[in-house]
Structures are given as structure tokens and as C-alpha cells.
Image 1 (cartoon, rainbow, N blue to C red):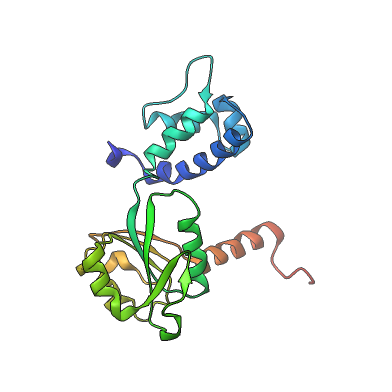
Image 2 (cartoon, one colour):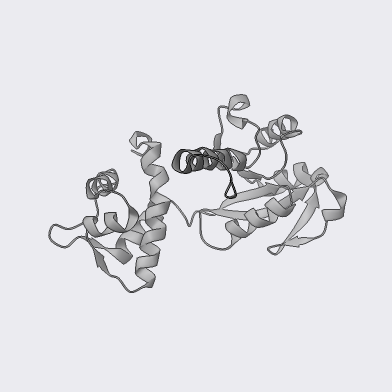
Length: 216
């Protein structure tokens, strides 16, 4: 059951997928858990444990068939399901995120982009016209998206997320600092806090190099 698999295992699956794609593209057909572990900086037992959560994919004395394992992990990640997705915020961040959604199969299909800046209306991002936020409700009622990508500041988030949940949004890819899950524990939220990540790097840098700037 998917519910029994820890989130830490789930979060490692995309990394496995990327590594296996690279191996496949380089013509590697077979790899052992030990070899894969060495390439990824993990342990062979960790890899076997993770794969065993889904039934295991290797063969004794052979290892893993790279193209087959790559395809199987893609199936587990449901990269071909094309969940109807809208994006709020068409600024620089929104443009970059739209590119990530559109450049390959990843389980989501961007069908609408919205921004409150009237000057953005009508501009095309990845083949999709930007609409003013006033058209959000009608668009959602006509097209039934179930995922929203949030690329705006936190100021207007409470009213917006309340509205999106009423319109049938069930999951959020959240680039704001607003804690959607606190207000709406019933929806799925994957938050990306860029400033938190940068501060974490600052701490790690200080731990590794003793603090101070490069010119100190």
C-alpha cells in the first residue's frame, strides 16, 4: 500500500529516476545495487530497502535492468497521469516554474496561467495565454483543474487558497511562504521555500568553512 511507504523513500524516487535516465541515455543496460549506490552516494542496503517497498526489481546475480527499472519507477511516480494544473503568478518565478512543468512528463499538465497584473494578460508562456485573475473562477468551473502552482507572495494567499479549495483544487505546489496545510489540512501540499533552502546552505557553509566572507 502506498500509505505504508515513508515520505523519505518517496522523496528519493525522483533522484533514482534521474540517475537511471542518465544511465539509460548512456547505453548502460545493467547495474548492481552496489554500483548504483556508489554513483549516488548511498548504500546498497538503502537502495535495496527502498526498492523492496515496491516489491523489489533486481535479479539475484544479475542486478537491475536499467531501462526496465527506469520505466517502473516512472510508473510508480505516475509521471503520465497529466493532472490538470493551473498556475497563479506569471512573473519571473512563474515563467521558470512553467518551464519545469512543460519540459517533460512529470504527472502534471499546465492548462491555465493567471496573474493580477493586467499588463500580463494575453502574454504567452509555454504556449498558454496568461489570463487576469478575475477569470479564475469561470476557468476552473469550465476546466476542472485539481492542482494549483502558487508563484506569488504570501500577502493575498488566504483568500486565494480558500477560493481555490472551494473550486476543487486538491493539491498545491507552493512557492510562497504561506502555510496552506495549516488552513486546509484536507489538501496535499508540496512547499518549496527558496529562502529556507538558502539559509540552510548558509548554515552548512558556516559549519564547513568557519563563517565569514570569501575576502575575510
